[in-house]
Amino acid sequence: MNFMSRLALLFYMTIVLFIGCFLLTFVLNLISYHDVVAIVDGFYNDESIKVAVLIIAITLLILNCLFAQIISGVREKQKNIAFDNPSGRVSVSLSAMEDLVRRLLIKSPEVKDSKIDITATKKKGLDIAVRLILKSDVNIPDLTAVLQEAISRKIHNTIALEGPVNVKIDVTKIVPESNPKSATVVEDDEFRKTKANIPFQGYRP
Image (tube, rainbow, N blue to C red):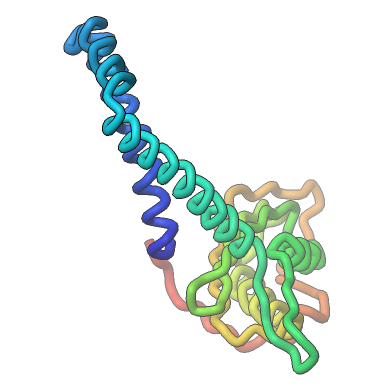
């Protein structure tokens, strides 16, 4: 989150906090109805206060529009990753990359289902969170190592990404098949390049 996004968040939090505190004091009778009427009447009858309130109102409206554009721009930027070609700039949606990873995982006979969530990082890389449901009993460290390497290679080869690709895999469920297959990890060409020489890095909390 950049500085302007933090400033926008602080702006909206301040307004909501002010409104909430005012309503709370009014409901708890910490400020009476007559006090509120007196304050509003003072604003209405004093021209200098009206001018000050008008300036504050216009400023708040301008800031609201500005921060709304900033927040929407940040969200739009987070949905895409861009790179430059000699002929111009190219933008690829993260949802398209998620579909690419999902189709890659389908090629693994051990994967029953997968959920993919990709976010762009500040270092022009990608964080890929993968939730897997496996459909056979396999060596999970070996399988996940192959999948991580295959996903990383697929992303780099597809969009020529210069930044790092961090692939996190969570195995949420293992559903054994009625006729379990042999312990072959992956048989597709996408995985054969990475299957042989990936050492097990040990268990981590």
